[in-house]
Length: 236
Image (cartoon, rainbow, N blue to C red; front, side, top):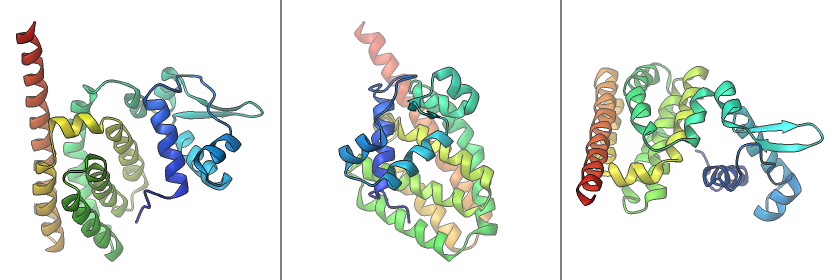
């Protein structure tokens, strides 16, 4: 299972937060390897692993002899159009959820054909993590994201895995908005149904529950956004 507390994940999350908070903006040079090692008490290997991953998804670029920099919005859009949404507003969540409704439906079908026992063990683990952390936003959504990521990984399809990785990173950057507008109840209800169907080796029902799960989250998010707009209008 992915170790959230591994040194490379620690570096990865640190850099992502700097970019998300705009502490490091487009074309800014980030901290050097030595500075990151000292700041986070990690090895060079951990720093290089994290930076390499961020370069791979288009958020960072490396210039020989100059260092590592945050890509501009234009560069991110060229290298990785989906990842450019990471730097945009919460309204893009609706578009992502619309896409995931069909994307994840297909992922479950592929998962049923390719998964192994280790994938099942991970799904069980992450579902239990969700139920144990209903009142902890960060841990709940980490487990939720990892549940979906396990299904994508279990397809053994490199294109699915890459697209899912990008989507998850975008959604992580909007975690607070997701929790505020959707909450944990929908996730718990449908993840239980999805897991039960997968255990029963019923891919058709499992994929149907996945689609319903995303639809329910999408509808609740839309309702919450509309309510917020109406409240703002009323206050004015």
